[in-house]
Structure formats: structure tokens, C-alpha cells
Length: 419
Image (tube, rainbow, N blue to C red; front, side, top):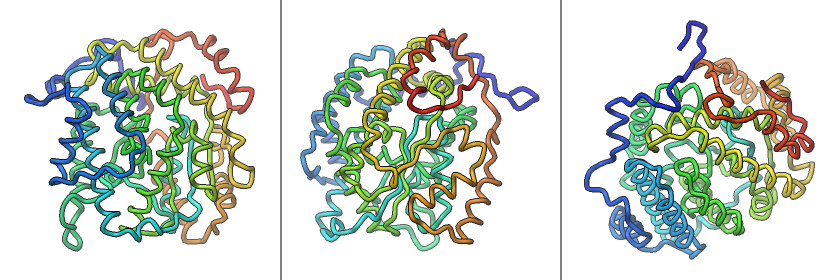
């Protein structure tokens, strides 16, 4: 880090590998990284002590098969990178088994109303994480911590009163190890187990989350995802929200994911009384930030890392997301939705706060306002340092050509260009 606090990551193309990163790239010995759908599901059954009901057939088995096929086609993954994805698949399938087991024992869960949820959508790196963690300070809203998103249903007995949840400890240990290997991640997207996280982890359990794409280069999966309706997976997410509400209320949810931006119609179908907040930022700035963050962590997952290939992949992926957003934007009426331009949002966050509360029909009490303003004071922008990005040099991207490619988005949403 420079004396100014600016962070320059100068080894994205040729990363310097520590012993910990080398070990992560190799992965644990004795793990079968080539296992198929049946083996993954069997591992999940074993992990849950023999639970074997995965619930309604929503197509998740087929989707898992497509993920594995696409994964086999990504020859640039390290063994450790491949194992991480397989391990995630086992985890989310075990979560699914626990969800179904709990609902069978307590069918009243499915009668719980999810009351006027507030969804936040927007490009990665467009302020959605800040917005959801900020609004979550209002205790009248139910939000999702990172550790809870990773393990929605406990796998063991509840902790003693006052003791930490074992799920939170597991998450903190895992992400602490990750950030020890990649210390600059905190300045780009810190993974604090207690922070409020994206609900695409819930879609993960229906194998319809774009989380897979963050960890591998799997165009076959992306094409399959866009070729099929995702409404059924948002219905599954609603079931998980009912389970989480049954465990701990209240029942008015605050949710966020960039993935929601390309699923506006599906969300409207499943949650017709919701409020939808969409953040918009210059896609060139988004891609500049996103590719740097992914390339930095690719030193664990990929050999070679290939920053230009990463940029090409994500430019296309962001374009598909934005085109889907524009195509589906009309699904949300003006009295239930708002578009927040990033430069306006950053310039006057208090105004945005009041706009969101008005849209949601939620009174801004004095207690809520104090808590929200305190969050802003505690979390200034770039508090972990400012990362310097080099989209043109490291990633070989022609910025002028990229702006021409995204002209369709600039014409629809007048975001400010960022240098």
C-alpha cells in the first residue's frame, strides 16, 4: 500500500504465491474432485446423518449436472479450485435436505407470510452491499448474515444461551483464512461472517445461483441458466425465507443480490407486494473493479490466471445481465420500484435513505434514523484503502470500445461515466 492509502496490486498477471496459496491451489489430499451428481447427493445425505428427501423436483439435479459438465470443460482451474466448487455443491445440497426435514416436521412454516420484502438489485460493485448493510441497522427488517446464508438450518443442537452459534464460528474461521491469503480483499469486498449477505446463497440450494460463475469459467452453465425460467427457484427461496422467519423473525425481509437485476419478472411473480430498489453504475467502472477483484482471487483458483480472458468473459456476462434488466424493468410499477444512480446515491445518501423508506411505506422513526446515520459515520467509503484499477493495461480492454458496447444501457439509465 502506498503512503496515500492507495492499494496497487502489481502481480495480477503473474501472482506471487505464498505457501498458503500453494496449498489452497493443490487442495486437500484424498478428495474426489471428479465426482458426479449422484456422488454429490450421496455425500450430502451422509453429511446430514441419512436425510434423503431433497424436496420438490425443481430441476436442480439437471442444473447440477450442467454445472459439473461445464466445470469439466474449464481446464484452467486448479485442483483446489475444482474441489472448492464440489464442496460448495455438497454443502448446499445438505442445506436443502435440512430445509425439507424441518418443513416436514413443522408444516406450519409454509403458512408464514413474507410481508412486503424489500429487494435490492444492481450490478456487482454498485453499492448494493453498502446499502443492504446500512438499511439492516433498522431492527424492524429481517436480513441475512453471511454465516446464516451459508447454513440456514443448524446441523446440531442450539448453542447455550449467550454462546456464539457454531455456524458463525465456522464461517468466520473459513473467511478469516481466505482473507489472510488475500489481504487486499477487505478493501474490495470484505467477507465478514456477521455482515449482511446476498440471498443468492438461497438460490444456490436450488442450483440456480450465479455464484458458480464467480468461481469458474463455465459458459455452458450460463447459457443454460438464461435459457430457462428462474421463477421456480425464487419460489424455493421463498420457502427458505419462511424457514428462516420461523427460526427468528420479523417477517419483513431486506434482501439483495446483483442476480436479482436479471430476474425482475420472476421476483415480481413470486413476491408481488415487494419493493424493488435497483442501483445503477457505469458498467465500465463496475467491470474495472470486478475484474480486479476476481483476478486477485483467481491466484487460488486458476493456473494460469489469464486476466484478459477473465475480462472478456465478464464483459459479456455483465452485458447479458444489463440487457435482461432493461427487458424486464417494466415488470415493476413506479409505486413499488426505484432506480438509484450511483453518483446521486453517493452524493446524498440521506436523501436515498428517505426515498427508500417512502417507497417501502416504512415510517422512518427517530430510533431508525439514528441507527442508520451512525452506520454511515462508522463506515466511510474506502476505509480499508482505495484500490487502483488498471482495466486497460492488465486486462487489455479498450475502454472507448467498451462504452460503445454499453451504449444501450447509458441510453436507458443516465449513469455518470467514471474515469
